[in-house]
Image 1 (cartoon, rainbow, N blue to C red):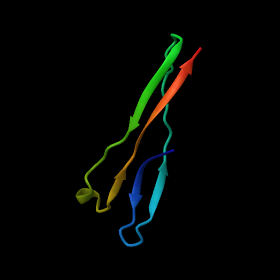
Image 2: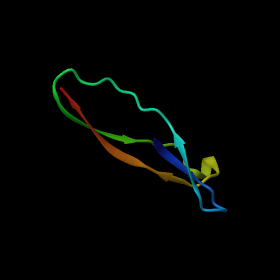
Image 3: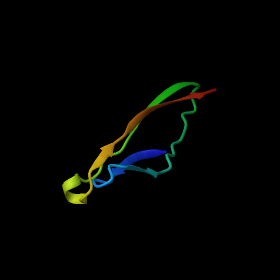
Length: 62
């Protein structure tokens, strides 16, 4: 799933970079919400403009 997207300053196109998210589910039944986000070096250090992306994920444990 795309976590952080790089943007080509010449074409203005965004390229997803796919990564895996792994976590250990709680053993108690219920609904759990996670906020997934990523941060990195500033664009002045990378030489590329970046678009940050974050999302919420809810899992149900029975």
